[in-house]
Length: 115
Length: 118
Image 1 (cartoon, each protein chain N blue to C red):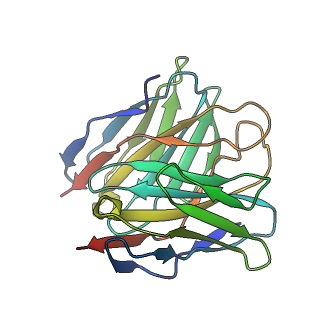
Image 2 (cartoon, chains in turn red, green):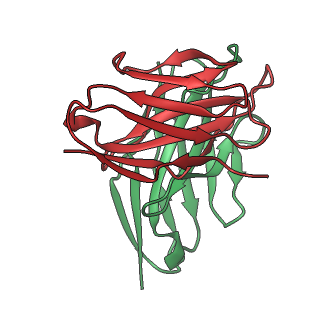
């Protein structure tokens, strides 16, 4: 059973640029979520995808967008990067079965630095 | 909406001593509760969870947490810590409901840095 893998692990961008982060879900999982963890803070929910559609979003502007593919992998796109976007971006997958809690499995994260 | 308060940002403790990391939550609906651990430069690993049933839950590495509904708490305890337990610990909550494809949004606390010293 493979876990959640994210790429790239580290990247540096400049203000105004765009970035795409990628995530492969754990085998057998059908839901993916993205979280932003700023330095010294807890993770903040960005959004969640199920059946290739966004079905939950946190308090993030529209320049944060995503995709879920038929194989349940996912991308997080951030446009017009700002300095405050510097953070660890965590992808998490889970299996939604229609009842009960979806227990998330997190990847190791992509650390984005915006200069 | 849910919220989580972790009352201690840092907890220093000597090896083999007991430790308690405090977590309180706020929610208008029933919740599921989690503890995650984050080692330096790594992602989050699930330590233990409370979904239903016994209010005392245990992990495989000696940690335990007790769900106290009346005090809205989910404190994490270990009777004897090891150097390898040094990490950041996050308490998280999600609402207890099966929304289509959802119920996944975790609300995290700000974390407690556990530092185990010799």
